[in-house]
Image (cartoon, rainbow, N blue to C red):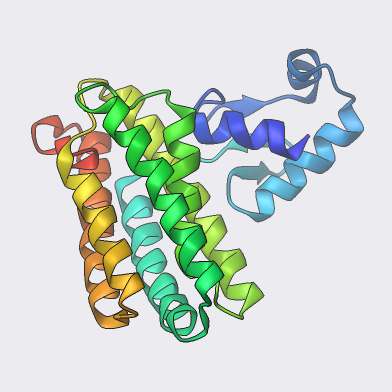
Length: 223
C-alpha cells in the first residue's frame, strides 16, 4: 500500500495540498481503511504526507525554499557517501554503476527533444544511477536518508515537468551524468562532488523557477 501511494505522490497524481480522506482513498485503491491509515502514517514520517490535528491527512505542499533545502542536503550527504563509496567500491560496484549509466543514457537518447513529463522509466533509471553512485558506502543510515531525499527531489521534478510541459530532454543533463560517471571510475571524489554540486544547483534553481512562475529560465531542469 505504501508503494502504491508513494508512486502517486511522486508523480503528482495525489496533488500537493490535497486533503486525503480514508473513504475516498479506499475506493481509489480498493483497500481497507486500516492498511491505508498505516500507510499514510508511514509516509508522514518521510515528509510526503502531513498529519493535521483532528483533520486527518494532507499531501505535503511544494515550495521553492523546500526544493533548495532538499538539494542542499542531497549535495552534502551524497558527497559524504561518495568519498566512502569511492574508497570501498569494488569492481562489481563499478560494473553496476556503468550499467546503470548505460541504460539511463540510452533512455535519455530516446527522449532527446521530447517532453520528460510522465516518463516513469527515465525517472526510475535516473534515481537508480544516483543511488548506485553511493551504494558502496558502508553507512546504511546515510544511504537511507539519501534515498528519502532522492524520492523528494523526484517528486518535485515530476510535478515541475507537468507544470512546464515545454521542457525537453537536452544534452546538458546527459553530459553531466557522463562526467559524474567518469569521475567515479577515476575514484576522483573531489571532482565528482564538484560536478554533483553544480548538477543539483541547476536542478534546484530550475525547479524553483517553475514553482515561482519564472519559466523562461527553467529549461535547465532537463537541458
